[in-house]
Image (cartoon, rainbow, N blue to C red; front, side, top):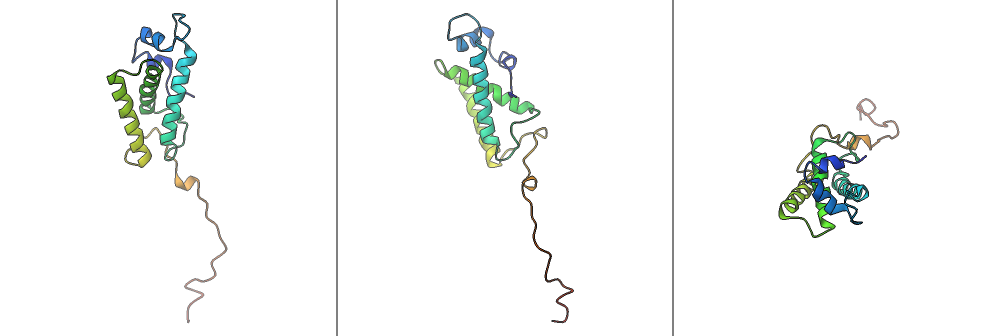
Amino acid sequence: MAYCAQVDILEQISKVELIQLSDDANAGVVDESVVTRGIADADAEIDGYCGNRYSVPFIPVPELVRKLSVDIAVYNLYSRRQGAPEGRKERYDAAVQFLRYVADGKAVLPDDAVPESVFDRVSLSGPARVFSRETLRGF
């Protein structure tokens, strides 16, 4: 499941821009496969940073993760052409910086992202206790 959708991207850039960024065949329409690839690459980048601290993929998708996915996907789409305008590059850089903070434990995602618990992965077992306070009395 993708963290954002084409409609989310269209809230950030115009349809004309999206056509220019995705239409390799000059058909005058948005190439949805190119947009889907840009989103998938963004989501993989997010998972790469968050995977050590959170269970990924995020289900349901936290709103902040959706926003980060949009910013990174738009940057990815611009990067296919001439490079992103300065404002888009700044948004991408801010998203990556935040993801680095998450990876380093300096920032956390909101409560709707479930952290990976160490206790979910560790199991301890062993033989019965040989010595106790009771068995050592008198020594």
